[in-house]
Image (cartoon, rainbow, N blue to C red; front, side, top):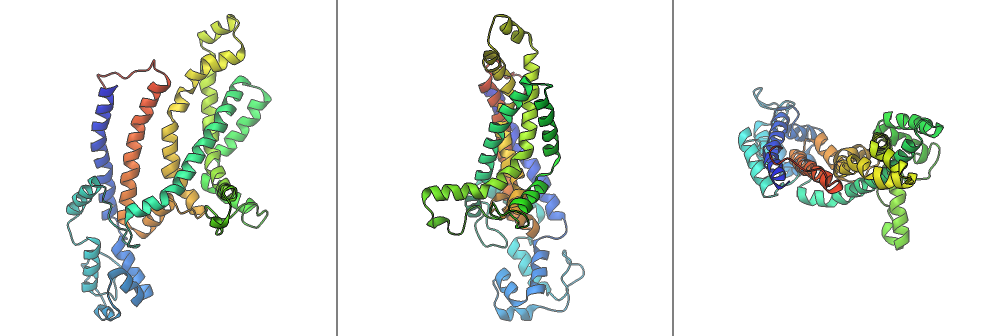
Length: 365
């Protein structure tokens, strides 16, 4: 297994470089970059925008001319002088060649130096550390709820395969699995938090404004009160998928000869299911735990954080994309890709930990 892990780690480097390079050059060559964003803000907001973005004083407006050279690399610059545009490009590093910016980014990332946001003038590591607890809360609790609900439900569906319980729960699962997460979140808000029908849950945020004034019990209740709708919206699809996966895994194992033999020897149904079938049937489900958490942590939570105004990594990435905040975008891409590749290796190792009968062939990856 050591040789297998070493090869996977070795392949991790070119994979990471390939993903970063592809996204970097596609994003950099696409129209509507941060310089264009800044110029559009300046044209719409005047002196204050200029001072905030360039650090110039109010008299820097005298630099603004009626038009720019038509050969400029950016559009939408009517009324902005070439000197000011060049100053903005230099501030963002666009005065350097594309390949030079790419290798400079890689060098910084090797040192875990992600720089500062273009528009918030803050360290990206500081921003990630501030928003990480929100995304971790969503990821951990959602993963826990998915497994605690889907595994017992899937086992019961397998045991009662073909019964009315199996039929109507399958019908509900199909419906839940077909509803997009963002649509289900909006439905929950409209019914339970929007004021149109019920106001049982808060509309936004992770905690109340008076959170620090509450007792310990009050803080815990307030925390879960705010998490209830986001967690429900995130888990409904996952519960449906994992329940069916658990059921199918159990049905496959129940049909094996060793189950028939155990029953013939007089083993109780509970001992057959949980003493023999469970370990083999749960192999795929349990081994997928790291990947499930990572998927919820980086992708599943983005829409939920945006809809429920939860200040986590998903919302940060969404705002960075909308504002063309390249340092934040690429830092998020680097971290999520690196974690995803490591989690894939961890998932493979989990297979061995769950079932020692599995071993990796040292001769291949």
